[in-house]
Picture: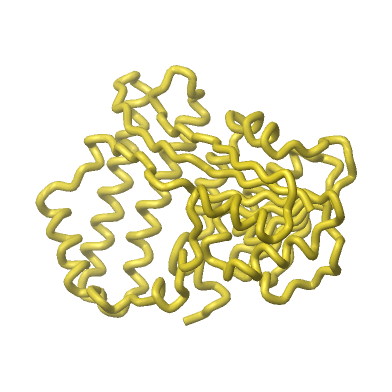
Length: 297
C-alpha cells in the first residue's frame, strides 16, 4: 500500500474532494469565512495551508487575499500534482508536517481543514506556533458532528441493488483495514477541547466560530450553477465508491455487476438534473457545520 498516496487512493479521490471543498468554500460562504478569519486583504501576507489536498481552499484563499503568497502542502503526491496543473498563482509542495521545509517565524497565517484529527496533537500545534511570526494567525477548521443528509427518493436502492451491496459486504468483510492502519481520526478533539488545547500551546485571543453549509439544490436562493454543482458533487462521490471496486481483487467476478451499477447511478443523477430543470423539487439536502478555531501567536 502506497502510504504517500493513501488518501487519494483509499479515502477520497481528487475530483470528489476538490468538488466538495469548492462547495464548502463557495462564494455563498465567503463572507462568513472572511469575517471569522479576520485577515487584512490588502497586506502581502505569507499563508500556508497544511494538508491542502487537491488545492480547493488554496484557490479561494488566493481569490480572497490577492496580495498574499499562498502555499499549499500535502503528503499525497496525486493531490499535489493535480493542484500544480490546475491552480495557478499558488505554490504547492509535497511534504509532511512532521518534517517541514520551512524556517521558524516565517508565516503570517497558517491554516488547515479537517487535518487536526489525523495528526498527533503536540506536533500539530507546536509546529504551527514555531512557524508563525509574532502576531501570526493560526486557523484550524474541522467538521462538527451530526451531518444531515437526506438523499432524493430516486436514488434509493431497489431489491437488485440491495443484493449487490450485500454481496460486496460479504466478499470484502474484514479485508480492508487501511483505515485502522493509518489511524484516521485518532487525535480528534471536540468543540470544547479544541480551544482549550490551542490555549495550552501558547496561542492568545483564542476563539471558536461556526459556519454552516446548506447544500439544497431546490432552495429558491440557489442558482442553477450552484444546484448543478451540488448534484454533480454527489454523483462524483457515488461513482468514486463504485469505481474503486474495480481495483479490488476480491471482486473480479462482479465486474459486469459493477459496470451495471455505474450505469444505473449515472441514469439516476441524470434524472435528478432533469427533474430540477422541470421544477419538480426533491428537497434532498446535506447540511454540515465547520468549526473554525482561531488563535494568535
